[in-house]
Length: 338
Ligand code: KG4
Ligand code: ZN
Image 1 (cartoon, rainbow, N blue to C red):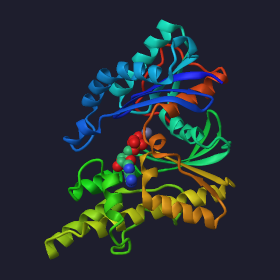
Image 2 (image 1 turned 135 degrees about the vertical axis):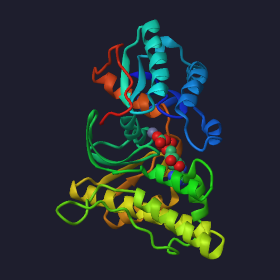
Image 3 (image 1 turned 30 degrees about the horizontal axis):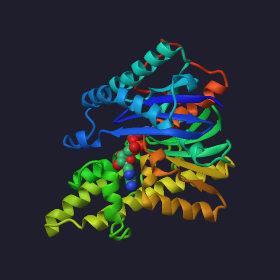
Image 4 (image 1 turned 180 degrees about the horizontal axis):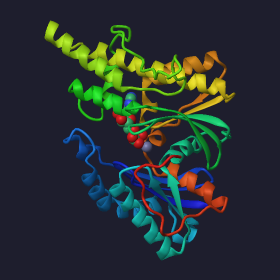
């Protein structure tokens, strides 16, 4: 299998990694969270500038950690979509330059395909078909993984992504950014049954509810109303109970849809990816439900769930082995279906 160096700059992590045969030889992730924290969220222009500052250092470090030189690299992988265009362009420019300079094929990778490939990095026996529940700050998708390059999105969010909902709810409770880890920590000290919150079902025009799609904006509004009411009535906020009840609603909603989807399509493995895969409530609910239905559920280690370049290199290597490469005219796109 090919040895690929990949660059990932779609959002707020500058990441470079080298992967061979699904083994991570090096993985550098320079997080920008500390920089964006003071703004309460990601500022695209700031992200691009940070990528420019870090990308060359990360490339050099990745080669050094893997103890490799350019002769051992068979191809250059790069995230080309979806993401912040300015941020993607930094990674693309770096990858194209390396491709030209060292005469290595360029392989453009869809960011979500990368998240799917994260699961291969630690589960050597994993084979398609399987279902991927991808839950991050930008996406909430149920993807039927048929083979390399063959995916079908079966479910998605109609509004906020799951991670985005965690971040927005944390903001309205003044808990800081990113909200997911803070809410998760508080939820562990709270009562998940303290407040009944809507699960975020999507109505069908024909009646009933969509089995795989979710909606989190109603849940966020319900938390907002509840916090306003509690604040007015009691003058304080039971943040632990609110966090636990909100997390319970999200975890239940995601679990219900993932299990229904896997059973409907006869898929016996569910792989979880994206930052929200770290959530203790989701892990607990999904594991329990999967066990009850005799399904296998895989949570890759957190360092491969959140944005990283090892997952991009892994996907790029599979494409390169199949002879798939990209032209140097490859562009960045903010949106693109997988
Ligand atoms: O995959 P990721 O690192 O970046 C994107 O591609 O978006 O995901 C970041 C998201 C953020 O919204 C963050 O709040 C959420 O993942 N997150 C969590 C947890 N850790 C990170 N959400 C819930 N529980 C967590 N423990
Ligand atoms: Zn991501």
